[in-house]
Length: 291
Ligand code: SF4
Image (tube, rainbow, N blue to C red; front, side, top):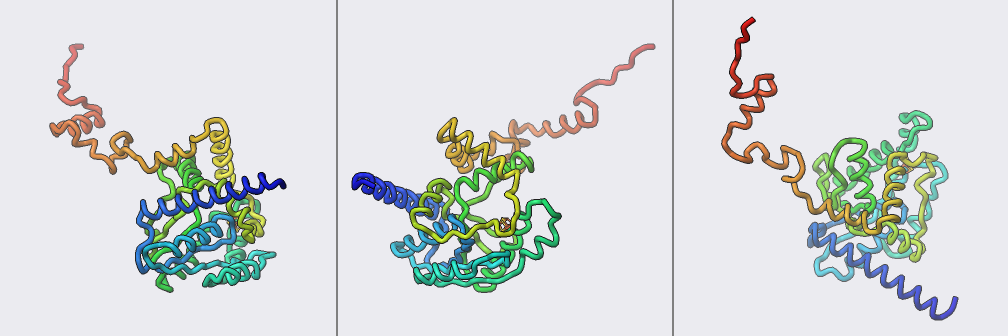
């Protein structure tokens, strides 16, 4: 490689790292994800997203005006061929405190899911359950997950197309059981950028397909649709993502989000509608037709 090309590569890498740091900082600020004194459990699957998340959070921690604690937690799901050395070796090399939990969710998933069906949904539910239990019992104040902008947009379309629901994946939420607060600091980051960053950083990526499961076909189809859109209409995915943060309840049709009933305010609309539903248009007179 020529010196000019090497310089260009270095420049691109620095620019990429800066962009990701800025986006993570912005998401954390916008959603008030981290407070002084937080104990954050960073879920580390061994994939590109979680390695990137951990690295960026550590960089932020070193410079942040508030003090917070980070602890990496990984769940060994007892998949065949799992390499138990890779993650500990990496975490020790960077001086990162960590815990590896062990739970044989692989056998459960194999037993419950019929042959040939995708196992990811049950597998992720069991993984989440174990990690959330651990966070609650160990007193972590936040759980950080490595989902990024593209995961969020994919989830939006999955819910839209297959569940008839307008919902995505929030950057911050309280878990369903109410015990934990989950944060997604990579919410503003593009998957391509993360993949590029992870490759440049040489993270020891661990595959998530040791189980032999097929990728969820619906998610695959949505991913392909978004890739095609982005290719033909650059910026469309970003627009969709921005729309998630700029919702106008009065321009949708969810009566729980907007009080359509009281618009107009004369109080007769409900009566008219009820009459109509009963098949009697309000105010209609009964005519007797002579035979
Ligand atoms: S690919 Fe395998 S390990 Fe990964 S989520 Fe799916 S079932 Fe679980």
